[in-house]
Length: 194
Image (cartoon, rainbow, N blue to C red; front, side, top):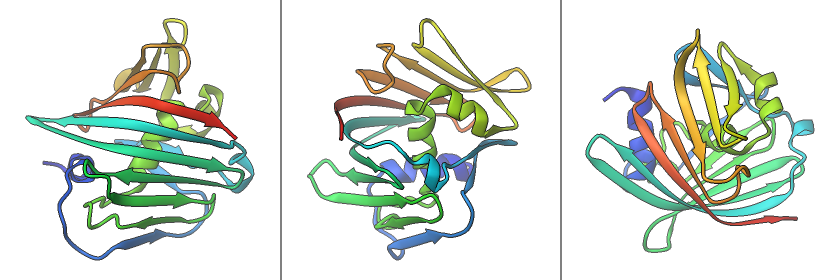
């Protein structure tokens, strides 16, 4: 199992290990979403959204299926994602303020690289034009009346996202990272602009 796939599987599997806080510091983080393809996270000035969302997430990797709930809170200047386990207890919290990312409880839930969770949320739900401006080494496009997003590297598909509505926050999104060989079924149960 390569490191990137292990990270996702470990996010979804609830196993205990390690200590609890990981902090990444510096300028807006550049996250590898595939080999030689990077997403630059928003700056403080670009974090302008204000909403709350609740999602049910089912991840698939090889013969395993893993599920958790995600509570996402965005406010001007910050975004926070809280993973909740099947029994209602918090698995992890990821906070990003445009300069620093803090992942609490991440290693207990085995979220080794918490930034991947944030990158998948942004790729699935953020404005297409913003992603285009902040994607390095790849390209993103939409098709099917905004019901599909494709991220390619040198013309080859690396990530595919399909939606059952034209609103990325409405209904169900299917996120497939072809290179890392995992899928996420993301069902938005609630989206509330603030």
